Length: 375
Image (tube, rainbow, N blue to C red; front, side, top):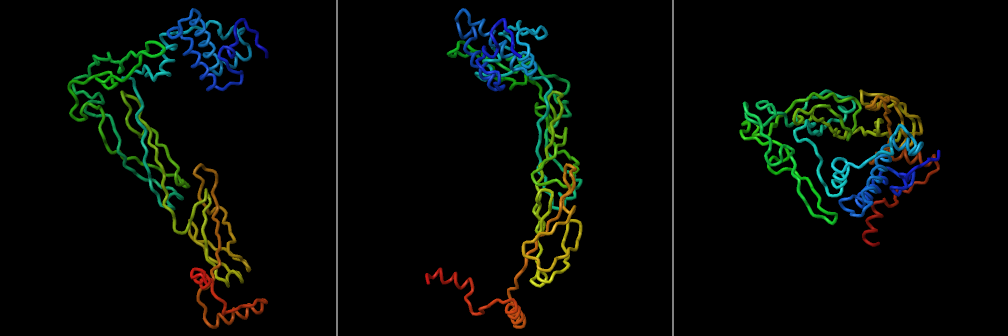
């Protein structure tokens, strides 16, 4: 639907196409905001242009507002796009220069904050990962000090508001730049960004409000978990700050390799040896499986490398999407030592098959030795 406009199109203001991505819109806004801000650009119309740029960005950067603008343009009475203004003291110029020059935010240093997440690597045997288990682990983590209830101050006393930053945790530092005088924010070096100072520190935590402890956590390992996967234990991370919620604990799984089984997704692979006789005549063999032993029939004439599939004998999918299979690859073993009778029988077998066997031919290793000698 074509838009009817009583003023400049927002896409034209920012110099982007209607199909521009969010990153392209933001990049164009930053460039123009830097160019037209009145504290930088002293031309008479700079302030009006800056307001126009900001109004365009406020609309096109919001998916819902952008959708309405694309449909109705400036004529939509419900959106109020025509009355935007630039707040130089709040979300306008201050935030722009925070982006350009690394200025800090206005976060209250005493506001509740979530605790840090922790990571723990758990090593499992192959079958423990296949069948799952319940285990209790012990993790080191910081917790709120019980003596001072996390304040860091000696019981009976309270922290004082920092005189240097006034409790904000930040200091404003003026800096001359090519764009004029800019105010940057940095962490207060007196209170280290906390906004408070402690005269009488808690003797248990030394004024930190937190102590190092070892916490026991019972973990339920689901059947089928694989190497490299991780589990999230909500609320088992470090304690929050200023009454904030605790972080989470992430358990990364390390699975030891098995000497016989090998995992391939939810399938389990293994190799079984066959004698020449078993492969040629067929046989019923017993194969180790994850939950015991199973028998499979090997048909006559089986070739080395043939695979047999046991349905549902693999690993359970950790997300509940069924169970894998066990895939058995047979390897025909050639005997390295033969008795005279075995040699005679094999020679007769070869003659019966129309094969010619030269028992006096050089072995492969003899040929390699001569090649090294340069013969």
